[in-house]
Amino acid sequence: MLVIGRKKGEAFLIGEDIEITVVKVEDGTVKLAIDAPRSISILRKELYKEIQEENKSAIISDLSILKNINK
Amino acid sequence: MELETTFHGTREFSEEDIIYFKKGIPGFENLKKFIVFDVEDNGVFSVLQSIEDKDIGIIVVSPFSWVKDYEFNLDKETEERLSINSSEEVLILNTVTLGSKLENVTINLRAPLIVNVKNKSGEQLILTEEKYEIKHPLFKEGV
Image (cartoon, rainbow over the protein chains, first blue to last red):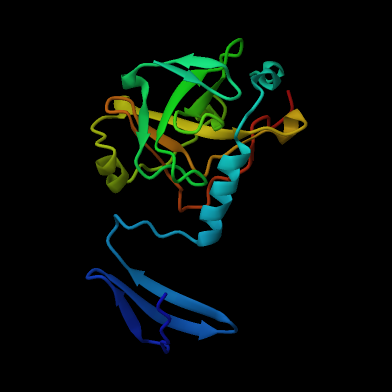
């Protein structure tokens, strides 16, 4: 893993077409500006984790439970 | 072909029934091949069953009859990745999580599964806008 230090206003590049700039640093929060092709999906990691958990909890092992659930 | 699932008996399927999720789905990134079968005596729910891990079957449902006005923008990049040319090729399914009570049954509207029924490729989209919840009650006003 690469760890780099950046100051406000400084940027770094990932590959040729992703640029990340530190816009603001305040009270333990960093605001970043990400310039990337639209094909790159950018998600907050917590959201991805929540979807992972939700998919796991959608596993069913007994379909008979569904008998009473109907529209 | 036959698939002996762990929890849902033996399921018949043919090669062209297999939906290929190139990236897997979140939580099951290593699983790429799934089939969908309808739950018997129900007519509402289906199961997205992995053919690589016989334990994994996820409840899914078509969202539109449950959630009025459910809509999201299918971005160009996803359309391209799944080679979607027309809306008739698109099947939308959302995962459902059961609870002990009916009020606790939820549908994940934030991350719809997009399937191109023509070439059988699929992907779970995570919507960036916060309009829809991960745990949206399926039965809003009780039943």
